[in-house]
Image 1 (cartoon, rainbow, N blue to C red):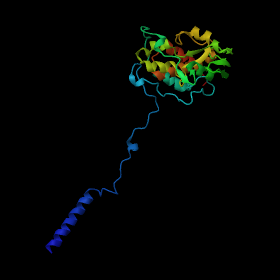
Image 2: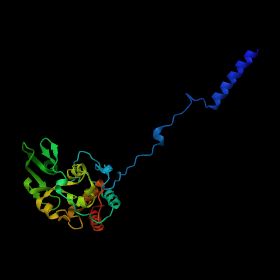
Image 3: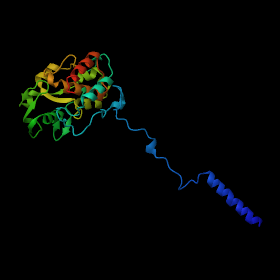
Image 4: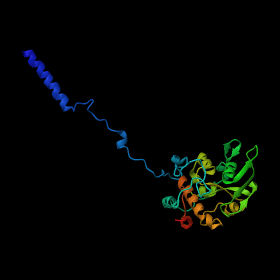
Length: 256
């Protein structure tokens, strides 16, 4: 009889312990790690001009197949509302020094495969009915220069413009970059940084910012302002007060 009482006491004690523990096992719910994770941010990561974290352009615009969208001649373009937000987020600072600058520090034109370099890729992308020779050189085609509206049928009369010039990039933050990031900046086929234009307009522009040079065809200002702003935002480059004012003026030319 005493043995039965002891067995019942043990069973009762085990039951009490199980009840206190909430019957862990099949009745316990495991927390969903996704439920507690913060939602992904839609804003592009911000990096200071010289930071190593910015070794590659931020994905602030769709990469796609590096083809221009409808109505635009440049790839990676954003709408005017997004461009205004990008412009508002740019750091305003006086231009930096040109000390130490050399175009050779921005490797271009990089090889892109099939004997083509960046220049030839842009000529093919921006032209119509472009034919290439065995060395990937454009031998025929038609190009319309965004800056002045001039139509050209001789590829040798077209330059590939860096929308944000290499020297301007240097003055606004690229002086602190490493060689790999400068090469990416000089050969960027995804963002609106490279454009086939007439040699005359490209050389007239030089390394000037929008407050000092504007495309002579004012109908191109909307695209130019959006492109410049997106490139500077993508690479974390600074703007001057005068540059920001002119970019605002250019964005104001965009249709609502």
